[in-house]
Length: 80
Image (cartoon, rainbow, N blue to C red; front, side, top):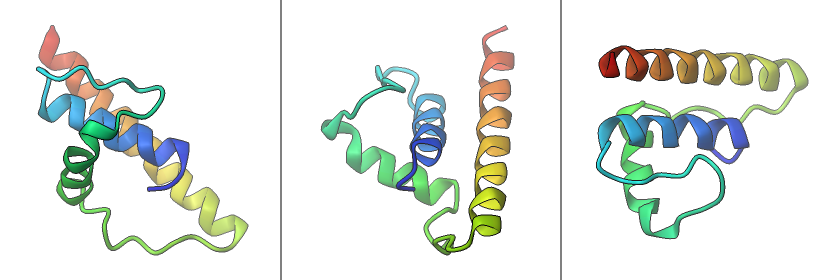
């Protein structure tokens, strides 16, 4: 997950998994890298192929944004 959108997805999942942490959606926090790596595994993203063509990139972006929105919606519902 080297894109901004991919990092946002993984950080959103980590915030859901560990609400006690102050995970910033902006910027890097090296101390959380091991936890972000575990979030990649929880989301089952480790084996995703690197998109090469424009259509593959757009498809991956669409999937990542959809996953992020579902996670954010689930987090918002758990707060209510």
